[in-house]
Length: 151
Image (tube, rainbow, N blue to C red; front, side, top):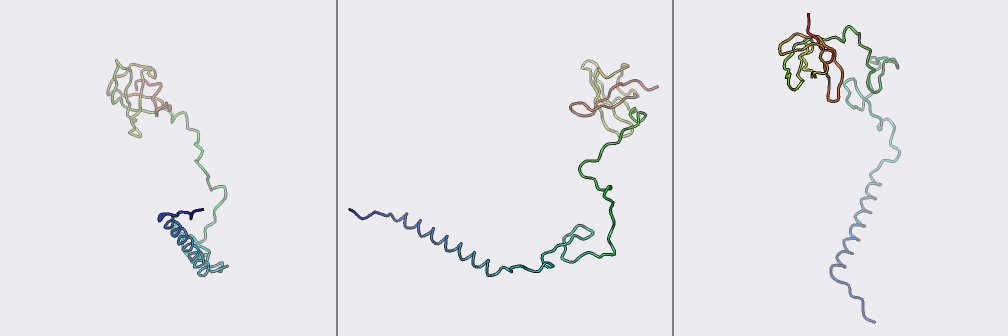
């Protein structure tokens, strides 16, 4: 039988694999030599100061604040029911296209521009009219409904 042929590339790849394995073993030994087994608990603890920064010094017990568990809110706050009187908004028609049947009303309080469709009108409106309306959430945001001319 003939002698198995090993190419130069195969020998180089084998040398690289062996070198990589030896380097890894050296790094592992170095880590084990430098590690502090069972370091003291005080060195491992971290504290948060009143500004939210992580420090190694414990906080001052005199600055301690008591917090009621009921005051802690997890997630979004529940919305409180609105007064029916607050539901009626006042505003000015900033734009209205009668042929297309839509426009925008600028809320007097929030200065927010609210979409209005012809289906939500009680009276006919035009630009610069003072109106009262209610706001409902539509697919794309707030919509003015039950829009009537202000008296």
